[in-house]
Image (cartoon, rainbow, N blue to C red):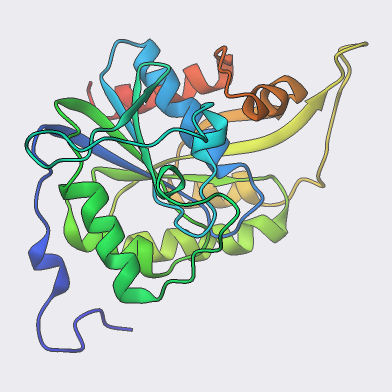
Length: 261
């Protein structure tokens, strides 16, 4: 498949985002693997390591970041320069379509409207000076993903997967998409890698382990962290609370080292 069927290369229009040093796309080939949780906690961990961080919720159809940061009833302002001011949560500058629409309303948009929304979130938001802009992508390999990589220079992608082969099937598609659009794969976060009982501390597998680690080794994709299932993380997400979680700190630290930052 070619991305320049019209005779011009859409990636020639890529531009740097003023004031933003790095754009990190967090993606998964499917939903339900905890991608938004990973994106938020990775951004939070980077901030705790002393970086200025923004979080762009690019999941237009299913925005979850507003609830996860406790700002589901907040709305952003427009400043004197006619730029949208991101909402601050946990020292992160955040923006989401969820701040701008009724949470009970379905967003029924087709491709051109998605492109416009992503462009506005990138160009019309006053992000200020950021070391990292973490982008929580929607599931799949569709319009939003292509719009992002066509419009701005993405430093690299972090892939999220659960251990089983059913998830790996979609991870391979996600990685193939990023390879096609020349976006480096910075690493993979294995989410829900195990479950540690809070009562007896016994560790067990939630999913049958598959070939995820073998595939990553073959493709030379570093595993940034193996995140166990932790009921505390889910409970905190429901009330907009973050307390930090060691595997995400590990992932952030490895990410910084790989980027020499």
